[in-house]
Figure 1: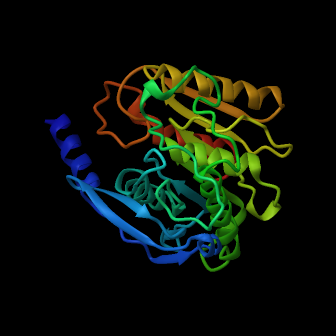
Figure 2: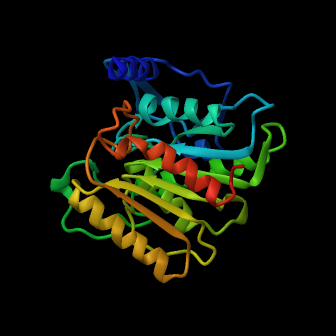
Length: 296
């Protein structure tokens, strides 16, 4: 009976669509020639596809509950879609319940139109193991400036700047603004962190969920604390994330790695059955934020 109740509660979470309080267009939208984005559904799960206008959707906790922390959510989707229900709406609801502001990022995808002369990268499905030539921290061998991936990273940096600009109105502390990226979105968040040369766009922390680095790893001098979450049964991704962890540590930066042994995710929320540790990834994220003093 207890398991049935848990499954019902999880189903309610999956099929609940959270509505943003604000939608704000990012400055990088001026680089997009045309916007033609669409919503696609997988059952009750919403994905955003097409030529995306770089923007953010803002989900704020009640003011009396806000603890000053904000997380920019970078959804997955193989750089061809944005998994909005699973990677933004569901997670934003939980973050809000814990007093954390959630900022859903719409970053540019592979089918977005760009100014003349801007080089585009190949279509890539980052969840297909067959695409990985070998296991390393850059399994897809993207390079900054060589694809839409670079533009997506610029969108992520713009989102961090925007959050800090609205810090007072949104009850956010500017030194508690970071990324949570899922799958390809984790690669986007990592790239935005490694490429950032502007203090106003540098994240305070970064969490990548099953999201390998999609460019050669170059740990920044002021590297933020890094939390890596993944599963061992995706060997190429897991091996790449192990290398990413070691690069962060070799640079003297703060990093923590959780490689779960079974279960789905951790890039999606799961029903709590008590049978796997993977389903506790959000709890582990919250514990990590607390240990790093980003939340009280």
